[in-house]
Each structure stands twice: as structure tokens, then as C-alpha cells.
Image (tube, rainbow, N blue to C red; front, side, top):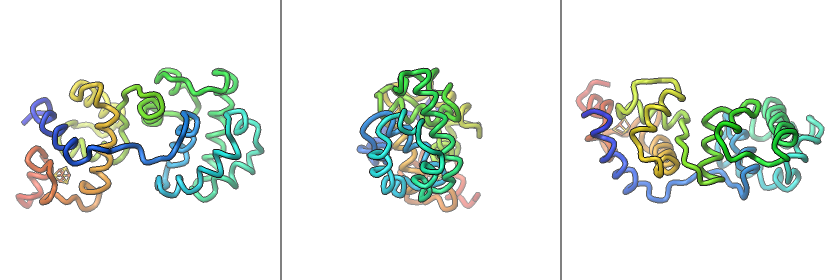
Amino acid sequence: MNPGEKIGPVLKILEEHYPDAHVTLDFTNPLELLVATVLSAQCTDVRVNKETPAIFKKYPTAAAYAAAPLGELEAAFHPTGFFRQKAKSIQGICRALVENHGGQVPASLEELVKLPGIGRKTANVVLGNAFGIPGITVDTHLGRVAQRLGLTPNQDPVKIEFDLMPLVPQARWTKFSHQMIWHGRRICTAKKPQCPVCPLLPYCDYGQDATKGGH
Ligand code: SF4
């Protein structure tokens, strides 16, 4: 089966199994989601959600992050790991927001990816979940599941995104991303994919091979 043939059943099965898939980072506005997404690098969403209420209270605006002493941001971000890098990154982003966007997070992919250190993945998370603009978020889970299913031959996240965009209806891009990420976290894990119990098995190249003893 080629990707065009299997995508229909794959989307149906994902919807049946993960009808309420959603972003697992807590936020109430685009800036909070942008900050939480940067903090979630190399950290669990659960951990980030524990720290962000106090962070969001202390720094309610881009200007607040932009003006904060770097050491103070590092201390606030410390529990999420890689805190020096994250402090520098978030301050750089917020300074750019203040200088170029009146302190607001822009609602366009083109503008978001111009912010320092922001790639298409983070931009699509923010667009899809804070602005309701569809985007496919190719993180490590989505990339792995898409490859195993045979929806893409590529490793590069941007190439994977462009392979998936014509296959998946645009209105489903954001939900599809969450569903694939949830599936990757729960069943199609990196080390031990649970192929024999996976609902996508009939449509999965890797799974078919694995259950025949190929992996
Ligand atoms: Fe992943 Fe296996 Fe399911 Fe394919 S059949 S999506 S490899 S768990």
C-alpha cells in the first residue's frame, strides 16, 4: 500500500483511538505556549507544567523576560534542565518580540521562524494550538511513527513535514500531530514498539515486518 492509500485508514484509526489528543503543555496565551515549548526541550511536559505557573506569574509579558537579569531567568528555568541555554534563548526571543512585534507573538509561520532559535516545529506548535492555524509538528515521536508506517522515507523533520502536508487534510494537521505524538509515546515507542497490539498494524510497513520476525 502506498502512503496515499493508507493515510485514510490511518487517520480514521488515530481518531478512534485518540479522539481527544491535545497539546500537553499548559498555557493561556501564545507567549506562554512559546515559552513552555522552549522549556520542554529535553524535559517532560509534566515537569514543565509544574514550573510554568510561577514562571508565567513572574514574567507576564515578553518585556518582562527581555528585561530580566539572565541569572534570574536561569534560576527560574533550572528545574527544566539546560537552563543556561533556555534562559538565553527565551530572552533572545522576547527581545525580538519587543523590538519587532510590539511584544506580541506573531501569528505567522514566516515571522515565527525569524525569531532566534525558533524552528518550524516550535512555530507549528504555537500556530496550531495558540492561534488555531493548522500545522504539522514533526517532533521525534511523529517522525518515528511516520517513518515506521511508511508515510515518509525521510529522516529530516522538515522533509517529513512536507511529505505529510499533501497527504493529510489541512484541517487535521494539528490534531493529527497530537494523535501521532500520543501514539509514539504510548504504543510506538522508540525502543519497544508494541506492534502486536497496535491498531495501525495492518497499515504499517515496520509492524508488518516486525510481526513476521523481521525486526
Ligand atoms: Fe509502531 Fe508497530 Fe504500530 Fe507500526 S505497528 S505504528 S511500528 S507500534
